[in-house]
Image (cartoon, rainbow, N blue to C red; front, side, top):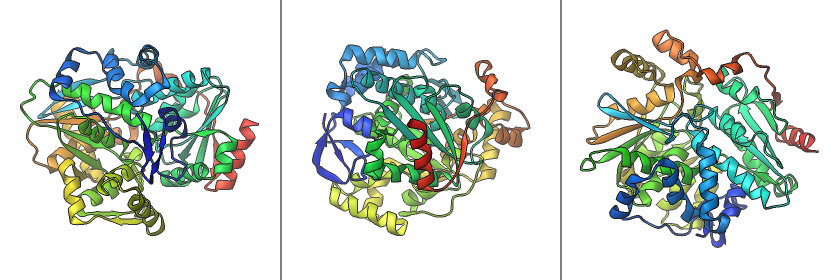
Length: 460
């Protein structure tokens, strides 16, 4: 399989380049040149497979000659052997819809599903290459912890994680900052997540700097993460018993990565009806999908901090599809977004979007109400992001199998849970040590030059 950039179709890339670079040199996002669409009978044959076997089936066509099928099997088994559930995820019935629990990995977030695989991909790649790689990643809370857990202690790899200072939950922060490994560096940036993301993008686009440190990225734009996340949509579909009814997913998302993985699964032939993009009050994606206005506004702090984002990095991949795969038009659109902070979607393109996507916005009070109602009715605690996904179905009258993606364990957001139901959701026993362990992170101004100096000082 060959890959191209959303901003330039003329060059093609191998998976190894796509994986290591993360972002194309022209600033675009990598996408496959072509896709194989599975038939109904091919998908039904997946029914007997466990999660790891299914992952190998879905992922292998995307990675070309990066590794053999046998090596891929070993990498996948190693990646998912650290999860608390044998088949990685769990689908449970909660009222008139189902909840797909994706947080059974080592850092209690859906990001582990892809990140554990990426960490082992890096290790495999570096075992066969004489080089060192420095990963630089921005996090709104969960990505950083998942990336650190996947990369920590690995040879010839350093990881630098930028998080917004005082804008993630204490548990999210401690999962990142209490490690002892010498290849892990945490940076608290005095700004919001979009500031962190912009710093990382600026470092990638500075070719002299990024080449000097052999920079790589594991943010949600990395195509390897998208393909890894598409697997659980397939596995979930196969767990559903009644396939006569349409299947709909509600996905709490800020960066459009997790829901784009569902869109990829649909393009691969999975019969998904609708994907609901569920947002908090930082609702750029809701405004884009419901009104055609992709316009950045002020970022508000909320009880669902992983979604406190305005510029959704993966949305460019959808813009490319809306432009009928015209990379020059996509380049112009992205320039306009950067310069003017907006992208107006005409009615024709909005109709295209609404074939696959719906959206919903949840206020802080609505989110707290969902947590309270679900706890009182079903004795189950949802984290605030999952509560937004659950409540989003109440804003749309969709028949069939309605599935909410549960993206994080509620114990990562104790303040929100306490506020909603006056209870404390405890960390799993094996992670309670982080509450008392010493933290290690630097606090730096939102200043590109200072961040670069910090990174260069650590790798020399």
